[in-house]
Image 1: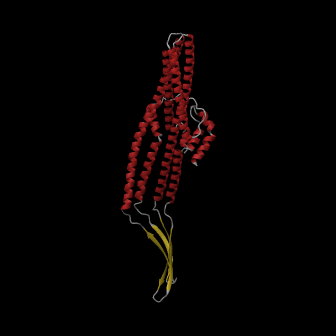
Image 2: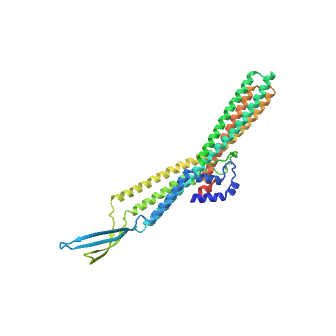
Image 3: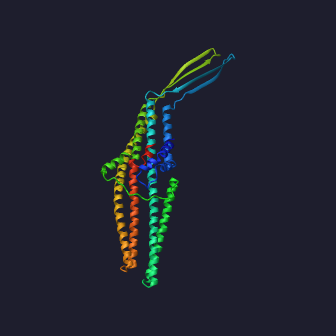
Length: 413
């Protein structure tokens, strides 16, 4: 129900969210909400929230219920008389003062754990969506780049063919041009296969995908915030750490509850009956209290061990989260820098290829030099494209982790 309400809110506000989203290469929030609403991992975490709600209700209500007891008997006397007698009563175990409040808090702690797991599942699904989406966008861009290279190679082949027929070029140059066409066509086939594979993976994971992939936007990394502050922000908003903290609090409450349970809950009852041919009527009350034994001590010991385990888990999670946050910030800023350098290298390589092509046209360079320059330009362009996608992926992962991107999808739970 929560997920359905979130979807309705996002659908109504889709235009507003689209206007405020600076990244044109990302899917709109309403589409992302629809995908998340059908994602198995998010659905699993959502059902976990429902389970936690019911468990909290069970703890508030208590497992203790009224028990009805009834017996019937027939008494025979030596004189031959028979007396039909019966006895009936109800009883119920009553939680001692303070235990109900502890059970309520335990239920709330379970809800907190489930909410944290839902947020973690949502963020993980968003990161997976972003990665698959950018893979598809980059694969489409690589396919278009391959198309351009094929056009250049075919145009070059046609020019060489004319020169060979005119006697201005050797047959060797034509063979080199034909080999170049075949090679770039192979690269185009590979690029188209990668494009189809990337789209198939995205479609299999998140369903409906637009017909056209958007162009990749320029990375926009915040380099003004100090690295230490950026890392601290990511750590403070990490859902895995939130889960560990919620589970630690739940384990601490479990210890308190088991300590309280060392004093058993009493059971109270009332009963009535008849005896001696119905001439005797009986009304009474019963009180029973279990005698605490070794079992309760072992349950408390287990709760203490679970709390110690959660302490260790929380400490380990803090270390891992800090390391992951530092690596993500470094990848975010380093990725943007690598993309800028790769873009400059690609521009220079493209300019060099144009100069060599002009030199070849004027007869100042041979065909092998031209083909080498074009191949270097192609490799530089592909490297820049890979760096571009990697920089955006790191940037969006960091924004998802910090809660700045699609925050309404995570915090709306």
